[in-house]
Length: 353
Image (cartoon, rainbow, N blue to C red; front, side):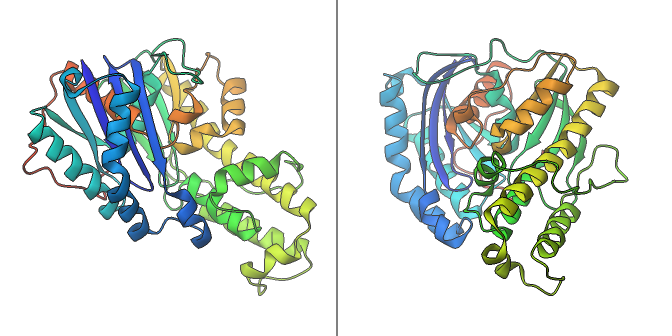
């Protein structure tokens, strides 16, 4: 079963080809991130326009890099939610058109679930990829962490899962972006804070962890406020100092210490919950998924605190990509899941798991 996956939920236009849910043949990603940096975040209209300009080229490149033609493709999978409406629309319309003109089955993919399935890729001939040694074994505890999602999900099997908890406000990736902006680090915040944290003292500031009513729920708004107040105090100001004025008054050392301390607490917040869920449910495998799964501190803490080994997917497969969509498409096809109607499939920007 060879599936071509198309992903366009945010600012990456991506296509990938996967065989039987484990073998990666190609993974092409075009990012419009450079166009958004000046705005400090993704501008939906700019992202959608970029998708229109490159989506056909990205799909063609995925076929070329896999040394395949449409005759080799058994099915098409596409992200239909969650994400930015205009961005999703470009990918879905492209996939619908290809499914009709190439006479291929079409599978509609949940973007968040797709991130989980990046961990099922174990083999590739593509250079520069470090893959897990084996696929996760069910039951699987998934910690899903990205710019829009912070969730704990227990997968009993393919397409059978229990939702354990989620964030009540900011997702962890969103908190990284906001704190980075607060202390004057460039967008996107995750990589910027991780890099700056290497220069700082992770225990310079004692930031709090939110206590939630839901056992496995998260909150990062309080942590974000604590960072703001600590930064204001660090420069000898009170709460009336605007966050826009902070970057110019913080020293480089203060920025590094705030980045390191924030990262430690933000990561501990999700890892604490993951360890607690592991102890309660005793899964055979634990995986992390989503853009923040590339964070080195998160990977370090999980590896040190989990009583079982944990494998991580390649960093290139943590952020949005077409390969993860193709992988989930493979499993849908192999497990006889329903196909989507290429004449009527619509986007679902607010789709949840």
